[in-house]
Length: 408
Image 1: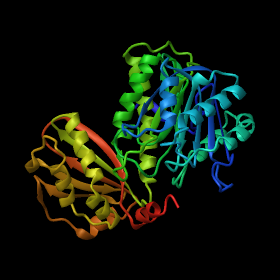
Image 2: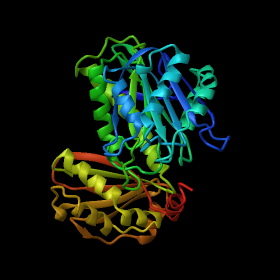
Image 3: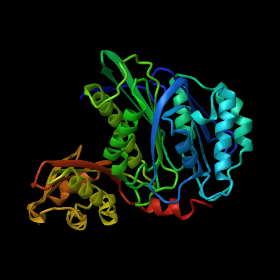
Image 4: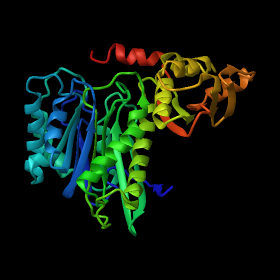
C-alpha cells in the first residue's frame, strides 16, 4: 500500500479552503445548508455524473464549466435538488456568479451542486444573502472542511470525510474528500455528491481518466436501495501545489496517484453504504475467482442489491441460499457448482456453502457473526482470477419509515 490515511478532509491538500453555513434554504436553522470549497489557484479538474436521464440543472452547468478541464471552486447546497425546475439552469448559473463575484474568479471556473427534494423551486435569495458569510468563513483548517461536509448532508446521519497521503516523485501528495449520500444510491456513477481535492500536479486528461477509473471500482460498486439519483456528481480538483512533476501519461506516478484517489473514494463509499437510510450494518460482498473482473463486479453488485439478502442480514439470518440466488440471476458467466460462500465479521468467519451446495454449520455462531455492524459476504467462484468488492447495507423497517414521509 503506497499511501497512508491521515487526519483531514477536503482541505488536507495544499491550497484549499472550505466553509459551510446555514443560509436559509432549509427551514431548520440548526442545519448548515450551503458549502463552498476554494483553491488559491486554478486547478485541473474533472467529474463524472449520474447516468439517470433525468439530471439536475447543476450537472448541466458543471459539465459546461468543466469542458476546458479547469475549475477553482465548488459551491453546493442541500435542502433542494434544483431538479425538474424551469428556472433550474438559471439558478445554478446564478449560484456560480454570486460565488465568483465574491471570490474574484470566473463563474465558468466553478463546480456547482445541489441535493434535496426534487421539483421544488430553489430560492436564490438566501444564497445571495449568505454569500459574504460563506466566503468570509473559508479556512484551511479542519473546522472549515467539517462545516462543508455537514452542509451537504440530507438524510445522512454522519458527515463523511477521508484523506490520504502518498509520495510522488519525492514530493508528499495529499488527496482528501467529502461526500454525502444515504438513500437513492445505486451503481451508476456517481451515486451521490462527492468532492475531492488534491495537491498533485496532474493534467486534465489524466485526472479525467483517474476519476472514471476510481469511481468504477468504488462508488459504482455501492447500492443502498436500487435507485439512481438525478444529481449524482463526483468531482476532483488538483492544485499542483505538491510540486511533483506533472503527470501527463499513465506512468508509475499516475498509478501511485490513482491508488491514493481510489483509497479516498473507497473510504467514502464504505461510509455511505454504512450510513444507508435506516441501516444498521455495512455489507461488503468480496468476490474472487471469477473468469473476468467484469464477472466479479456483476456478481458482487447482484448480491449486494438483493433485497431478500439485505433483509436476512438485518435479521442476522445466515440464509446463504439468497446469495446463490443473486449470483444465479446476475447474468454473469458463473459455474454455480463451483461456488463457495462464507460470512465474516470481527466475531469470526463461517463457511456456509461449498461447490454450490449447503454444508453443516453452527447457526449459533453464524448468528453471532451476523449480529456485528460490519459484515463480509465472501464469494469464491473458483473459475479464474477476476475479483471485485461491492458495498451496501441491510434493509430495515426504518428505511421504509424514512422514505414514506421524506417529502412531507
